[in-house]
Length: 353
Ligand code: PMP
Image (tube, rainbow, N blue to C red):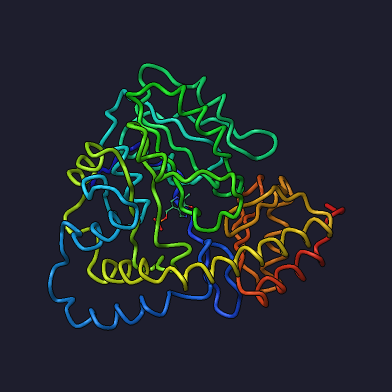
């Protein structure tokens, strides 16, 4: 006899992490290749000698720092082991087996995995032909069983942004007992002045949460820390379903130091935005279709040619993230890394295949 695990897990796709290949440039996981902010590294070094102690389970100082930064009561903040853990806690906190979670597709690949594992029903709403969220179709998908809607903006992996006016009009029409989670993992890279500020929206709407992360612009992906500004009862429920001590001590101090280093953050985001615009422009000039992007990556909807393109990039020592049969997502790196990618993109036979 062997131990029995859940039979349904056999059908469940595994989360695919971007590959690290020694000697190759990794543009596969939407990290910032500049590294953590210097002040975060100093805080980590200082706290390293205390890691024999459990962290503050209530994440008090970081919660206070976030509350002060966003001018909200600390009761509205929940911190998680990466925002992906908060995604799971959000489904756990709102859904039982009969309830439905709506999300755009293709979008962040953890949404369907988490929804399935937690045990709720998933409702995937296809993107528009322009690779953007289809808010009208998402509204049409709402049923009395809907408890949660994930709205990813900018959307991973397509980079497309929702404009403030269209998002507000959508939110006006969502029933007030359905929680809308604005997944803003790439918020800091948005340069479009018409982009929404989810925290500002969450402050004035009772069924909206904004979820952000220290993994991307702040460069702390390896430490695993994300947060949400949510209605107080939702934040309380998230804390209840959380695994105890899920936010580690180094993550807490590094996140506080990073929050205080806004100047350093702005500088690096400006660099990413400038490089994003250059890479986007050059890809269009080569002949690729590339949707407008407001994140730290570009999306190449290559369809059936994705695998071939991925292999070509690997041969040229550039690791991108391929979604077989759909497209490739390429993270914006340092200028020389982007040059290496652009050289690979140029030497790919775009018209062949
Ligand atoms: N949301 C989106 C849209 C993402 O792309 C990611 C990371 N790829 C996350 C959430 C989770 O990030 P983390 O757990 O590192 O905070």
